[in-house]
Image 1 (cartoon, rainbow, N blue to C red):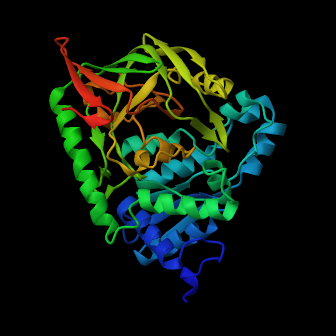
Image 2 (tube, rainbow, N blue to C red):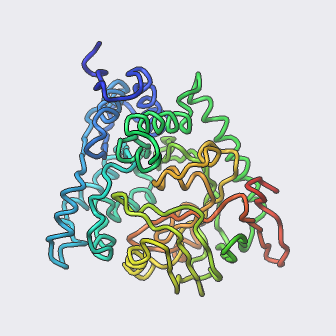
Image 3 (cartoon, rainbow, N blue to C red):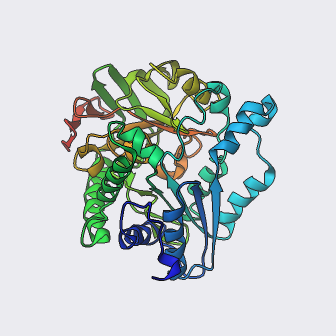
Length: 411
């Protein structure tokens, strides 16, 4: 066996399967180009998939793969012992590094999923919420500038697996989570890329139908939810494959099951109840989240757990308590069908329609509205959809048009 493809015996999947997953991430996901520099952001405990992704990138012709490991215990020390001024500080070279990724037209890959549990449980939730490193705002800038081809994908770990499947023994839980992740990402298909294009075509069709309607607003109704959310005149629904400014196609999220746009940040009124827990990083979770909006701003935030951390995130800047994204998800995707809470946004947001506090994706509006979209240093998705949550489109003439009923498209 070539050393570049060796994996530890702790991986509950064959090396060949791990390699297929890595090829999907590097190929369909980031679409790494010959001669590109690749930035790979990962965590301790994810070494096996990290190495497989590095090998795949070099096989595709990458010039250099820069691997950045994140250690949650280092973050813990900063939050526990750092000064108040230090909590949300990061040196200028980190900002410059991210911007250079765009200027040099690099590829970016991130491996997500819970890497360690309980590390932050005893910390002040407000201080924890203030520290967002390494998810610094410059990443949103290069996304909106379209200067990097990038993707995010999940990497199962034992900590993540026992959170998702607490009734199973750790080894069994990890094997089960790997099975679910590979199924969701269509790696269990004979041709995963072809399988993804079938789903992406369906998302493209839904996107087209939404854009034809040009709704003025959306109305969400369900248990604990009665929210009217305005759209901008040029809000344009997007999904699936994205393109850089240089025309490189890539799939920003694996998996992706959503169709999304930027709402009017000044027009959100009513109440909404989250239908899945909100994962805040490091295993910290906000459950039972309930939010009331007035004039686009979240004026009340309550939760069974994690309310203080969510309030702190939404107080970071002027736009943090307003919405930057609305995404619709039907019931035909693979995440929701498993009826599993994954406690990580990459997966849970693809199980149900969702909203996001904070920064908008500016390419989902026309040039004339780019000055009106929400701006913030955060982007925090929370799930509000489900089979019992109806979504209705409201036209400029006031007509109400069913959009989603029991998770099924009506338009």
